[in-house]
Amino acid sequence: MKRYKRDRISKYFARDFLNKRTWGASCAALVRDGLYFGSYPDQPQQTSFSMTPLDRIVRERIALDGPMRISDFMQICLLHLEHGYYVKKPAFGIQGDFITAPEISQMFGELLGLCLAQTWMDQGAPEDFCLLELGPGRGTLMSDILRATRSVPRLHSAAEITLLEASKTMQQRQQETLSDYQVNWVSSLDALAEKPIFVIANEFFDALPIRQYMRVGNVWHERLIGLQDDELGFGLSPIAQTGNYLQTRLEDTQDGDIVEVSVATQGVIDQLSKHIQTHGGCALIIDYGDWMSKGDTLQAVVDHKFANVLQSLGDADLTAHVDFEQISVASNCAVSKMSTQQDLLERLGISHRTQTLVTNAANEAQKNDVISAYHRLTHEEEMGTLFKAISLFPQNGPCPAGFKA
Image 1 (cartoon, rainbow, N blue to C red):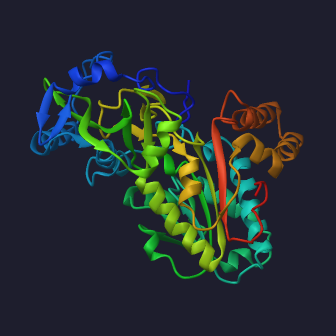
Image 2 (image 1 turned 120 degrees about the horizontal axis):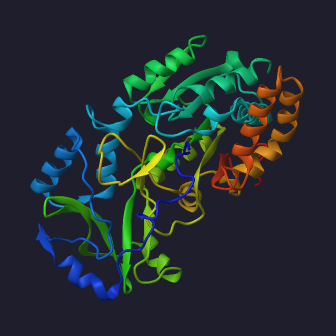
């Protein structure tokens, strides 16, 4: 059975491993550079596996510098210049490790493309703007967007098609998919020109590094990855974390609960929203997650199956659920209400589009494929309610179609 990136949480990594009674004993297992580290009493045992080159690199770094933040662990596993997952793996589609919505059906990209086109027109159809995708995968989503909007007068001539992509391997795949278009690549948002940006980000923020904090009594401690008995495992820093956000989370959490914070996500939203507020445009963000994080959502996927996050480093995709509240709070421009993917696509007309494709299907097999794709994108047991959406747009400006202000 093929998996989406996160159609459920692995039972091994969704559990709260520690409580107040066991914290002292488990954290006393190892002291290095002022950091306590220890295995959790009910942590799943490591099974036999083959070490990857990145396994050795991570172990050597921990042995030298001490336990590692989860954010640094994710950064190395995904973006190491030689052995990182996104550097070397054909990540997307049937041949990759997970399936994203654009790989399921053209309808997803078509409807979001028309949403972007309508927002562009609602903002006066600026004659020069950046059409930007964050984390464009193989380029399938941008291809569908461009096909759906080719009949919109002046839109393509006004658009500078831009992809935020650091991997040269992925840039080559995107060039093949988008060979009929002139495409610009940037590796940083700092490279964007001072003009309106209309942004699509589908399953981008879930791959950005997170930090995890566990509540012990009324104190928060950062969760770390370290070595014990030559095996990777999780432990806690003894240093109490007293940030304002964590203090507010004492109201809705209890002993042993974990909350996740993505400083990288906050930075991207801060930069995008300032640009949108100053120069115009919008951002459509679709991802797996919810409003306000709680629990350990870090997970690994290999060949459409969940895997141990501490094994197969560089061969597994690592992701975490997106906290849409943190996106909203970090924004410097207007933010829509969070919506399920199901509700957004229905408001954009996916039922009507499905019926049109079914009517025009050449045979029964095509008809069934369209119906199956509709079900997977919108049904609550598939992607419909697991994935959420939110949009950014200028203060006092029109909210993008399909979203609610």
